[in-house]
Picture 1 (cartoon, rainbow, N blue to C red):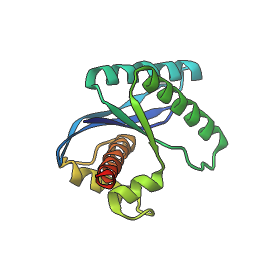
Picture 2: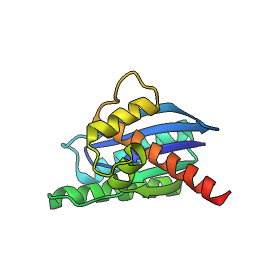
Picture 3: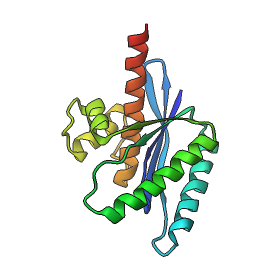
Amino acid sequence: MRILGIDPGTATVGWGVIEIQGSKTTTVAFGHISTSKDLSPEKRLAEISSDLEGIVKKYQPEEAAVEELFFFKNQKTIISVAQARGVILLTLENLCVNISGYTPLEVKQALTNYGRADKTQVQLMVKTILKLKEIPKPDDTADALAIALCHASRRKMEAVRNS
């Protein structure tokens, strides 16, 4: 099972692909999509969609986990991130990838068993679980891998519950 984790944004979209084989979880690839602030909003969204389509076609995940939006202090930021998330969801749907969403709280609880864990604690768990030499940068990339791991954890819990 391949899972694509995505941390939505307008300037930077983090992504990470993990693979689950039995009880083994490995990293397939990770990175980020960057868009220039000099581009119009619609061109930035088109670039996110196009780049994401290339990632899905290259790594062929069966499922995707996308971070849910949460409260933002900056209203302008929430609108642009919501637009980017919408484009991400539409792109994944058009490519027939099953989609799940997780809040930051759910991701923190899945990786650290503590909903108020800080970013560093979550990133260290990503590094440890995936046996990486260092924490992926930028933070959006590490967050995307954490979202993928959260989805993998949720799938395992549902499998146990259903057996």
